[in-house]
Length: 266
Image 1 (tube, rainbow, N blue to C red):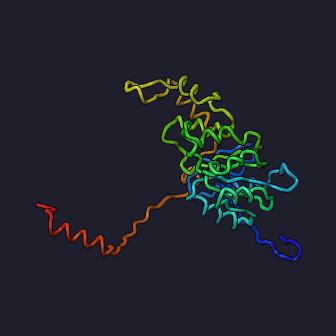
Image 2 (image 1 turned 45 degrees about the vertical axis):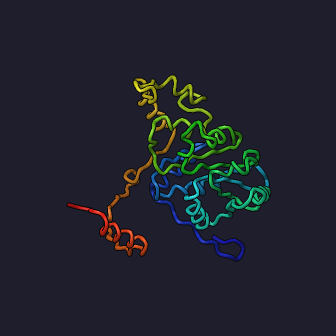
Image 3 (image 1 turned 90 degrees about the vertical axis):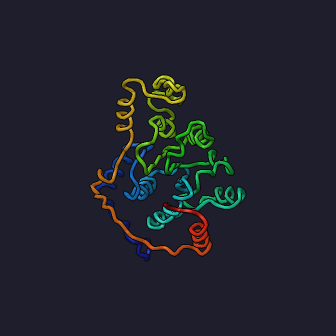
């Protein structure tokens, strides 16, 4: 491809499992990709978002929110995908000033952005992506309340999760409600819990009523794309590596003292 007289590098073709992901996102207004890490869901997400018709004539605006540990990965993929982007960091004033400009397509920030710049809910976004969406699993958390109560007019909301199955089956509700405004036929988490689960003998643990697990699994299977490395046809091979590390001098001194002053064996 050429842009004027400058050659624009072609993007790497998708693998078959990425093609499956992309096809799913084309059929779904607000996708849930429950795909194991290292299977390439970020490029799929970016390329799909770039196909959205911008709400504003100034151009596309996509907000990516996730844990700080994932931001480096997004930066790397956005660069490889030849996208214009900004990482929102610094003071509240600096972030807010940056957001007022319309000079890039993608905005990347840690998920706590709402604490310093709650105005993000009022800006025009073509898509908002919740990366590692398990951060929405607690319905009592401030971030969950903010996300579920915001961005309802955004045409496309995304949930990405590297660990497809949550630890608690009830954790599905907030993540899916983020996408659709409701989940499993309930617009309120507490109604969902009270009508679909019962309290155990301890008075603290909740257990699903008969048929609830099957219903949830069916619902998730139809609504989301869940993919493991095995599903993608990628064999996982364990590699064992022996590493020898030099113990820091201060730690070595403590070990020597323990050996000389305490009985460590028979």
